[in-house]
Image (cartoon, rainbow, N blue to C red):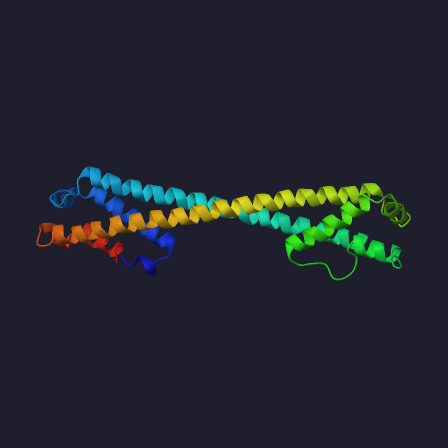
Length: 221
């Protein structure tokens, strides 16, 4: 089979057809039985196929979970970034002439785009505000009180937990992709040998021109 030319779903469908045809054609079983392809060996092939399908289904589910996780994270981060930016703009007004506060709260410069660096900026802003009553008092006079800052910090920690969950899901997907690749090769090797044996076993026999054989071999092209 030219596996590299087939999409995975097509490969799985064609593989299933080959197994189905093989299970129904008694004359084929008799022919390949003389070449070592007993019921046990055919059952081994079915197990390899089932294992591949199982891991592919697991990967598909995890891919959906991964997408959902990252979508949720992205939406949540947009909300928190907007809230933080609002507080940041107010802080820049409040501490316009306070160089120390500007430095302590990291008010100068653009906000980072890379998540880890952005998270650091917001964390420092929240933590240092909460650690300095004088800063909080000044911010409160502009509508940003301690509870508001604590809420932003709590949401930020929740976002980080979600980020870590997304990383765990991503790691699981990578493991499944690797395992799927291994199982695909195992099944491809078994199936390739099987098709070769079928061609040899039926050569010159009455089954050589049978419809089921033509159908089986067409799936293996």
